[in-house]
Image (tube, rainbow, N blue to C red):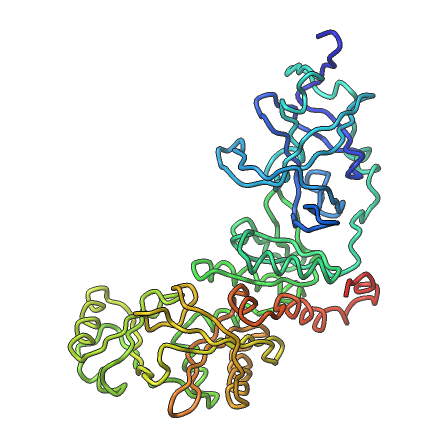
Length: 466
């Protein structure tokens, strides 16, 4: 026991292997595993081994000083946080230096923006080395805020590319991981920003967007909104705030709002001379028979206006079935779309991925047996397809009419020619990248470069990896 050092409940330590000369830690023997605040956590391979890259903002409430780190992956574990939540984290090994002593410890990587300390030192790291005096603090030296800042040069971030915020809800989603990976590959800093953790300061002189922990996000060059339907209102308000501050949005708030309104988007398509299946709109009508007749009779499709990813969509194969479905929706007092059924499509449709006015990839989606919706989320399959000039033109015009830089445009082949089904403002990447073998995420980042980088110094792209 006499050989063990005594530490207070909080101390200043160094992580020299990670180029972190000064970071304040909470010394907590009640926690098993140590944890380090990290963002933009991205796994990669180096010489056949698993590594992870990540960014550390070492000083609390300082969003300007960031250190980019890389380390071999020691493990990936499910860890219970102090709030009781469990999440899967990468674990690395690194040297801890406190006072004159140093030794190797294991550290899990997680976002600690909302916590009071950038690092938590757990009992596994202390074992055999340290005792804790909970009544004391900074037994190895205290540092004022300006002294701690002096260890980090202003603008410590070693990022020569664009600073891009990915506005989304799920950091583990394939599409979000691919976008972050593509941004890093092209030499940019892409940070995942949970929409729910962002909040807005409305002020004529100093408008701001804050992130959990109080970090100000005003230094971004661009944002990529990937807003789930349930977060449309708040996500678009957040995107609009960034736009008002001069931050480029890959898809604007107005375009996203229009795309999420199924009826308005169809009206917009028609106003731009683009063909859609014959569609009726009603709010639980009494004239059910006339509504059915309006779209050419059965079979027909009945959709809830608020449905997403194939939910709330029913095929009524007979007039009696159509009446039953519409009458069922009446009891919900729901807004419904009734649409002609394109039988000759045979359960297939086309997804065209449009970026910056070009179709960069296209796939054919086929419904699984017994299903009429060609939706991969519902078990359908995707395969590469060669689209016609007419289909390509229609997809590009649809994205343009909606005002979207990035769009997933769904078409269906009919005896009358291609028809528009829907325009998606946050299209998924997994299905179309898997079907076509194309790197869609890279194309999205390049679109941002084309629209933003020319406004900044040429050094923005000088470290880009081709």
